[in-house]
Image 1: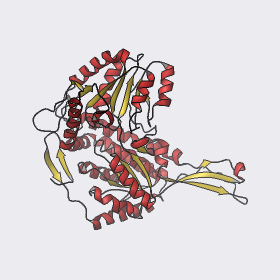
Image 2 (image 1 turned 90 degrees about the vertical axis):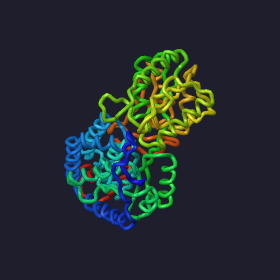
Image 3 (image 1 turned 60 degrees about the vertical axis):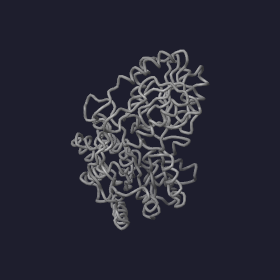
Image 4 (image 1 turned 45 degrees about the vertical axis):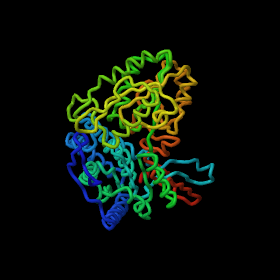
Length: 471
């Protein structure tokens, strides 16, 4: 089977194939993107905002067709795909609106540093390589592309090989929106080409969302080349339920939190850690909710859970469930893939887990929940933090003192209390431990790929103050 291809996960049928770029074609693409950087950095932030708003308008106008392509390529439900396109348009408008403030000169205390003027200036650094995953094929890219382009950087996208149409589509959107040719360039290459790209002196930094091994590989190359990286490497997010929680609401949200995007989300809740006082009530409601979800054709608006993105991914999820069962775990619902075409897996709840089982420590990338019983707050924190990951986390409690403790004690980049972990343009997003480093979104995400430049001006300077400039 061709490596770069659209393969419908609901049927297993290969719909469209692509030839990988030659080294010469790849070098030409890097050159175009570098030339575009010198054009883009010379534009005003207001001009870039006009183009970014135009890109948002295109996404809204073409939402349904874009959503259909995403569903066909990686299997998310059509309804979820439509929502993803809308979210991307919203993020584009957010950065178009906020970039002038995020990039404005930041005054410092001139007297303290013996200057007549002192300030911080944020300027673009150049071509940024984005290595992106298939699970949110538009949103993962947009949350890098919108702030990077608004800062005046240009983007070089190496997307997952199973979503080539989505990758090419986004390049076309930015081009039609008015950005200079090459400002956002998709390269159809295998992962082996990443070393070549990041070693090129015209490429100044990289961002990756993906697996831990992929992140280590990118970091190794970037370290050798002395280039900045931002890495988001997934997680095994805890979802803690304490005695004071609204158990019905927690079980309802838990179902969505585990099965969003067919269970294929880095910030999906995966380990459900429930206090013994409410364990039985939660387990009963949660398993019933999970079992009631409808698995089927992702284009059907009544479908809750579509297929997993690949046969290999489906088989790996089932292997993790079988390992748990073979070692004494109990399946409350699901646990067996259906017969027939497509790479479907039913919503599944597994309990009686032990450290000897793969599900205890591994991320499960599918609609499978691990259920853990604990007897105290301290034990809940121990289990929640007892993983190498630290991306998102959820805690359910109406006790204000516990809420404060969870906010401090959960070892994660994101803590959501009485709600489901999600990403917002307004809030920084990223992880700790093996979930990576750096932040996307908010002003922090824009400034990750800026030169934070100190400007110190001594005697004899003009009287004009800092603050009017925005690169």
